[in-house]
Length: 136
Image (cartoon, rainbow, N blue to C red):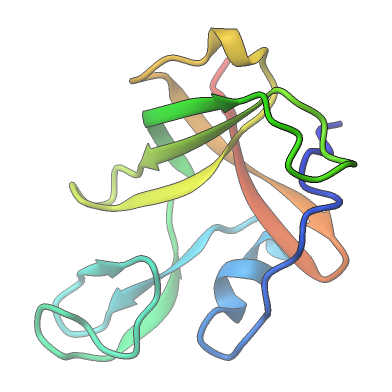
């Protein structure tokens, strides 16, 4: 099992972000979607930047492609295994919907731009960290 995140400081779960950090308990990647115009917001915000409508948490497919990435070789924390991949993935629900994450489940040298990936979750305490692994 991947445990690259286990010793990293965890995000604060607030009312504005709880959907994102706990949706993995149900196997869902939850992002905010405007109830008026359908625009997806990430990172979360209090109102839709397009129409000022109200955003509500909604599940996305969990599918994505690697938009860009870097392989980190620096052990920034003593208990985090290196190397690991930090990536920005593009979600198909909207052209500009991106998420910064880690790619797991394959050697860092095999990650490629355009590679199809799917969300997986790593639970650390009460946080479910959304990570992505290559689609078989």
